[in-house]
Image (cartoon, rainbow over all chains, first blue to last red; front, side):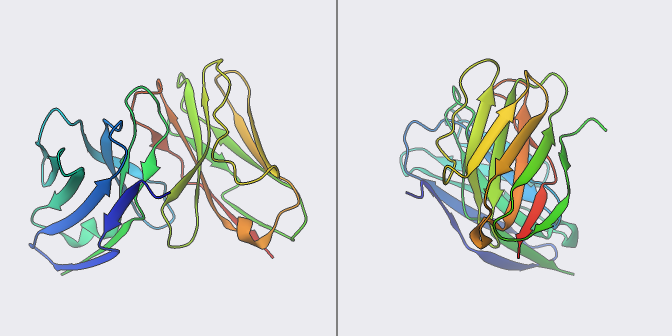
Length: 112
Length: 113
């Protein structure tokens, strides 16, 4: 059972544009939602994370929007840069238990 | 370095052979996780160690897969009688405690011929 669904599978954006990646979850026990960035040949690196007590969290050019009633959350990358080209994964877990459930990933390409 | 270290970085082996993958977590991290990433797929949970508690093995795909951890240090993932469908990148992560962010190694790319 896929508990976290991510879309789109791939995304092409022009430099300076906004990249938006969406995720939906099923398990209402999840209460921690991180986003990971992965470059080819490297392990995923934590980018930003949110808990459901807030609807939005911003760190630099990266913003997570969270809709608890819809069980959806999204990553917005403002002023996208070619260096942002990577695969992005959303994930979810219960705070009290470490195991992460990942989305399928989105390959982001930012054209100069 | 101070990050999670995995070895080998690449492993090519013949179908039917056993393989052992190693993970050195960040010093002091009590929780350790193994995930598998198949081509074009997300990360699939395999097993989770937290301190002295019994490991959560619920993600292991078959009894050919096993893992051990020595105290709060090194972990090894063993795959017996490898099959072609075992080809994937095996990623290890560690966290200070189970409710803290997970830090990933760069993985072992396993290819079964």
